[in-house]
Image (tube, rainbow, N blue to C red; front, side, top):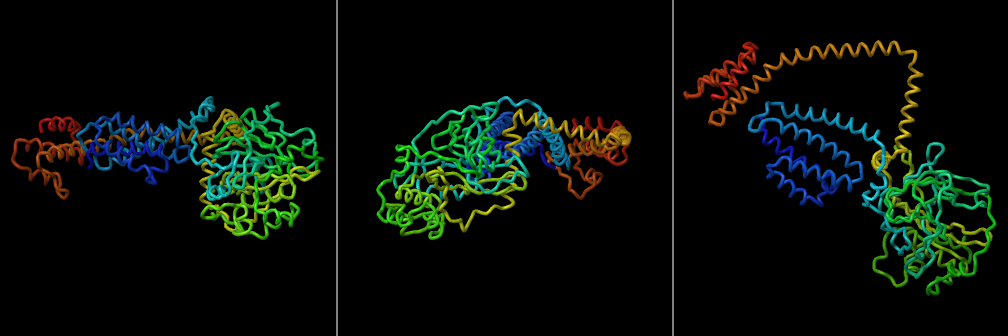
Length: 586
């Protein structure tokens, strides 16, 4: 037996912890905010105001809705509903009594059943009600796990910290075939200024691009008529602390809800909205094909891409020895090692230290060295930051690029060809592995993001169209089987009606047994408070025979007699009210 007071206290404490655990996310389990949660639980155990505890717990759940954007919040919310139902049911039972054996599990089962109904109804309403507050929600969208390093400047060594993270940054899917995307470079920002330690570009608003018939035209007519291979794909970009869009190939058309887009002189596309978590866009890009005749750079622009800070003379000598972009690229790829380890203590000249002492580094060191040497031999160049590679997720059918796929490479201006991509970085000998569990969790997060956080009116219409298509397919396929289906449905309904008619009789047959046990347990509780407790091994009759000779002994004997008649012989239909009257006397 468990007293109702203990049962309610346990449920209320669990409800409060669950509500605020959803707001703290994984930290509630990891222990960072364990002191806060512990203090709240201790306070809850002293509260007598049940409504106050419930409101405090609900407040935690609401806070979690704003700051916990992952699917883990769904688990906390479901547990919260179950505990809330238990708390409501427990509040309807009179205090001071006892719960019969097995009552707790029956309450839990009922709570799960009610939660299933609540979730089913809530899910239907969620998918059916129109979506009208998307813009307002984006102001409260979670900003955790943002990946920096893709703004207007990059410090040498900064990308190493990013490449150690496995945060998913880009989800990409091709519009044709099975959605797989080949290994490509996803270009973000172009950086042209270099001071020996960092690359950056001056702030630039760029040219505004607006949609025409739903599409934003990025390329000019010459590019759009260019013969070659094209690639259409969809990108969902998240957790990037920059407003740049990462795009593979030469973009010709872009479709997005962010209007306008801003195209910089470096060819980058920006949204103008910093820290946008969850930008979705479609692109039609040119990958490779016929060359275009490109005019030379203007004199001032050319000088911008040739500027250099004072360099170690050995850097200039090495550049003049190698001479061509292809030779510089091959030298760096074959004569140096790739590593994410830092240099330790700061050095005066990171570039010279990389080329002539350490001879190992990660992508931005290789890109910086090549760009600087190209400028030393009068070849305009710039450093590009973005992503490269990716892994196809078989569960979600999206190609995922993580923070560890961050990359830097070089674009050099070749007369007659324009800006040409060069990548001097050797392959990483120790890439960050992708496990099946990570893929599964990423797929779960993708579905949660697409069908919960980003569920829009367009998706509602798409879902409705699919359901209508399934309805038509079903009606076509099963039209000839309709009579048999009707017969089966009729039989199922008849069986359910028969069970429904039999259920009250079954309940009536079990009711005396249940009521007798509850009334007898109440008598035992009253006797226990008088200092008389029934041993577990005694039968009711034996216990009644050993009761002390007191004023209440006759009432207890009559209750025992009536109880045995109700419990086993199921006689005396008026025994229940008689026992309740004797309990009042007792």
